[in-house]
Amino acid sequence: MAGLYLHIPFCRRKCHYCNFYSLPTRKYRKEIPKAMMIEMEINQTFFNGEPLDTIYVGGGTPSLYPPDDIQYLINAAKDNFRFAENVEITLEANPDDISNEWIEALSASSVNRLSIGVQSFNDDDLHYLHRIHSASQAIAGIEKARKAGFGNLSIDLIYGIPGQTDEQWIENIKMATALKIPHISAYALTVEKGTTLDFLIKKGKLPSVDDDKAAGQFMILMQAMSNAGYLHYEISNFALPGYFSRHNTAYWNGQKYLGIGPSAHSFDGTTRRWNVSLMENYIRGVYDNSVCYESETLSLHQLFDEYVMTSLRTMWGCDPAIVKKKFGDMYYNHLMQGITKWIEKDLLIMDKGKIILTDQGKLFADGIASDLFL
Image 1 (cartoon, rainbow, N blue to C red):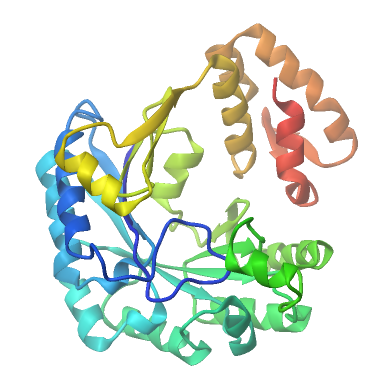
Image 2: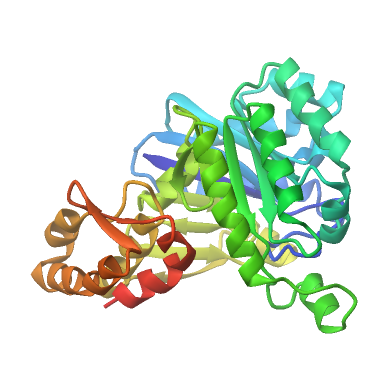
């Protein structure tokens, strides 16, 4: 399974919490897709003929572009890489961009999966997050997408927002499940260093995030989603059967992926690289066919650590047999010795030979994984 990520670095307005590379500007709006097409040509051999199973157009806000421009990028991908049958092609969209005209045009494109940045069905939450759209626009956007034929839908939700009560969070979940959204990504609000949210909280202009409250809302989320028939297949992701995100699953399974666009990341199985972020530098580098990224080749230790971290996040868990085969006895012994205390604390279990986080353990996933690193 190989994946292609296309990064659109533009947005209408920067959300306070966002730390992805995107800018609320129209500068370079025409130049970036052209440069991305050239970057795909430069990287034709990246997959060594392996077919693409998934393409993800993210950002930023890809829905700022007309669907014809999105199709232009998809066509460029098809010109340079092999496509698997039934390739999953996802586009991120903001609710306020989903007009009847736009969604109808998108339905005629190759995009077959839509990820809508809802974040909340509560206007107070959206105001805190500095989102442009309203709750009613979010619902309308979902309905328009469905009417246009997009059955494979995903939405993003955020919990742990200051001022958001548990009851309001439950109503958010109820709305999502009542709409029968097949895939839901839910994230705790985190205050990333250097973001506007970080600045406003430090200045006392916005209330800070309560980690304990967020943990409680995560527990509410897991129970509610299970009751509604969703599979908790990755810590932040829930899906009805048959609707897992193939693209994100490829990331967690350590598959190859190529990132195209400013700040996009790539991984070929051993080497990780990341493109320059500054748009003018990216465009210049691509047109000069010069190196416009930095890279690092991961050591066996780093590959082991990464496998532990990513596999533990999924419902399939960490497989000691894979560790033994891929990394050797030393890594296997280290892992099996390290999990003992977490099993005794009921934060990990062994299930059919796999190491899996319990629901309580999912609250401490990062800490448990780092404790198991070599």
